[in-house]
Length: 370
Image (cartoon, rainbow, N blue to C red):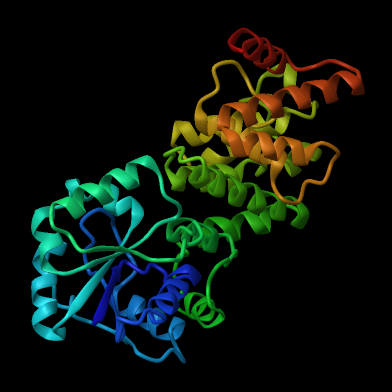
């Protein structure tokens, strides 16, 4: 039996390859057919089909009994599994089709799911059983589906997170040859010019901190399933300290509050101005996240909480208590933000001196809500 393993593969990552290797250990599996999609029904894919084919070839180099299919090369419009599988059976004969555990749970949302389960066996990779998964497995088996659960639980690796981290020069969970291809072909570089401009405008240590802040925020957005726009998360994280160096030189203070001028929080207000004027950012959500990333304020939005917290928690931070704050963030954004805001407040109290009014309002707001 040949196994059809479809996906956007944008880019193909380590867990894709681990799943292929595990499939090849199954007695009933003769070979694995990797099927990159041209127009995935539920996601956009700006990377070209040919580029994704190239990356798949590099990622699977040296693996036996693996074929990369260009079946969808000439496909037009959205193509659904119920339409594609019968054609693949005509080409390859006896086949099975790979899906994830989440896909099985949501199978009723697919086009003609009752037809899909009758076409061929389904091989399911799940990251751990749940009540929803068990219920879906039982339901579709009772409907006549030949559904086989694979004995490998893939790590939770996201191609989306990989792409946005690649914008920042971070290439986790990728084969080295794929990384070189991405760099050589200028893939996942939508913000290349913005990042290059920032690098030339601020000190190297501040620049590296900005990249780490953006990367941390991107990963938390995914791991906590916040649903925030990844472009906004990246831009706000990258630019949050874009004006920090300016505060130590003569600069225009006409658009920042008078009571912040010359204080450690001035750069957040000035940063929103610089992001708008120098980097062309006009999105109010992004500008708001930059504007309050140091002081916080009451009624913070999720993006504002994320950038405020990521500034404190990025992997370069090594102060006492940061591990505990990161643990709080792993539980929820609200818990993480609350812990960060209160920890900052305690630090400022111990340091002595005036505390900026927005910070006092933020702490008071937290106390009321919790």
